[in-house]
Length: 97
Image (cartoon, rainbow, N blue to C red; front, top):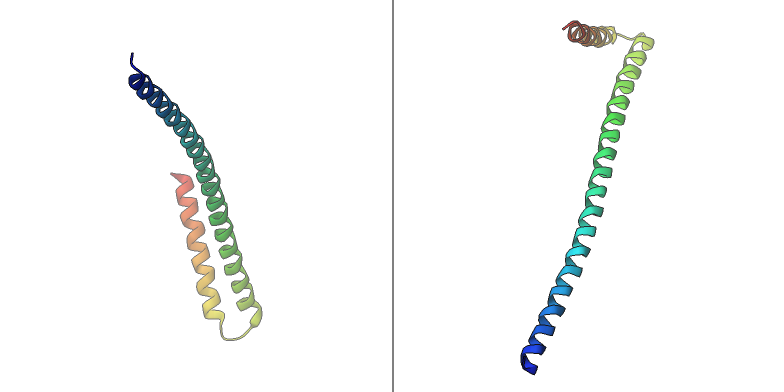
């Protein structure tokens, strides 16, 4: 084997080694990003649940405020109560399936 061929072979070996090192680095980075994605998905789910709960509490507070105000907003309060009753009926119907 000539010196030039040996040099080319050494360069090829070096390039292959660098390729595998870069591949390993990218694989590790991919795993970290996948972990981060799962963590963020979980956080999004928690925030959605929190938003739903806050919305529900807000509706309850509005209803309580209307009921306690004693002003001519009784019609609106009755509508909200009816809406809640319909939602409860839907839930019961789903449970009976």
